[in-house]
Length: 374
Image 1 (cartoon, one colour):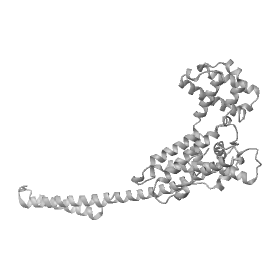
Image 2 (cartoon, rainbow, N blue to C red; image 1 turned 60 degrees about the horizontal axis):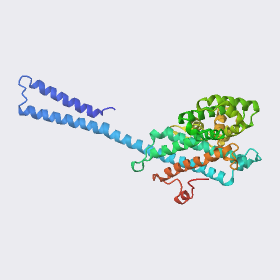
Image 3 (cartoon, helix red, strand yellow; image 1 turned 45 degrees about the vertical axis):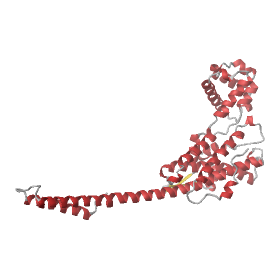
Image 4 (tube, rainbow, N blue to C red; image 1 turned 60 degrees about the vertical axis):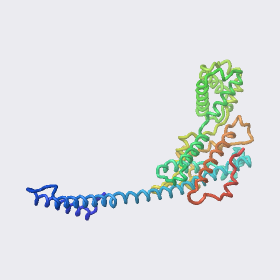
C-alpha cells in the first residue's frame, strides 16, 4: 500500500525540524529546558497524528471497504447458488415423485421408443446430472460464499449435500443384505462371525460380481452361461474361507446364491458424482452455470466411447430399465430411490428455511412438496 505524497512530505518536514533544532542546541542541549520540552512534545504529537492518520486513511479504511465489498459479493453469490441449487433439487425430486406415482413405464427397455418417452427418459437423467452440477458448484464456491450470521447454516447445507452423495453412492446396505441372505440360505448364523469379517466378505463379493459383469459384458449374473456361474461360485468360495463357508455349501445352493447376488445396483460413486458435476459446468469468469438441455442432448447422442457419454452413462445407471413393479430383491434401486428423494427434500427444506433474499418458491407451493415417497 503506497503512502500518500503529502503524508511523506509532512513526515520529512518534521524530521528536518528536529535535526535543525538539535544542531542549534548541540553544545547546550538540556532536556529540562522548557523550549526543548515544548518542541519535543510538539514534534512527537505531530508524528503520532501523522502516523495515526496514515494508519486510518491508508490502511484501516481501505481494509474495511474491501471487506464490505467482499461480503456483499459473497452474499450475492450465495443467493444465486441457493436459488439454482433449490430449483435443481426441486425439479429432480418432482420427477422422482412422478416416477413412483405413474410407475415409470418410460424407463423400461421394452417400452416403445416414441419421441415423448425418449424425452422423458433423457430429461430424467438430465435432472439428476444438473443437480450434481449445482452441488459441484456449491462445493467449488463454498470459500467465497457469505451468509449473514443470524442465518449462517452453511454447515447444515453441507450435511444435506453429503447425505445426498451418500444415498447415491453407498451400497454397503445392499451388500450386507446379500451376505445375510446367503447365510440364511446355507443355514448359518451371521452372529457367529466377526462383523469386520462380514464387511470384508461383502466388499469382496461386490468386487467379484462387478468383475464378472465387466469381463463377460453381462448385466445380471443369473443371465450368464453355466461355466461362468460355476467359476463365480469357486471364486466366491475362495473369498469366503475366513467365514466358514465351503465350496460344497455354495455348490449345493448354487442357483439360489446366484439369484441373491444378481440384484441390480444403481450406485453412483462419489468420485463419479464429482466428475458428472464437472461435466455439467460452464464457467464465465469467476462464476459458474450448468449446461443447457440442448448441450446435454448433444453429449447424449455421442458414441459411448466418448468421455462425455461415459459419464452420462454412469449417471444413467440410476434409471436404466427401472421397473418399480419388480421384486425389490432383484433391484436395489427400488428401495434406494426413496432414500435419495428424502435426502434431496432435506436439502430443499434447509435452503428454503434460510430467510435471505426472496424465497425460491411460495410457502403455499413449498408446503405441497411431500417429504417422502413410497
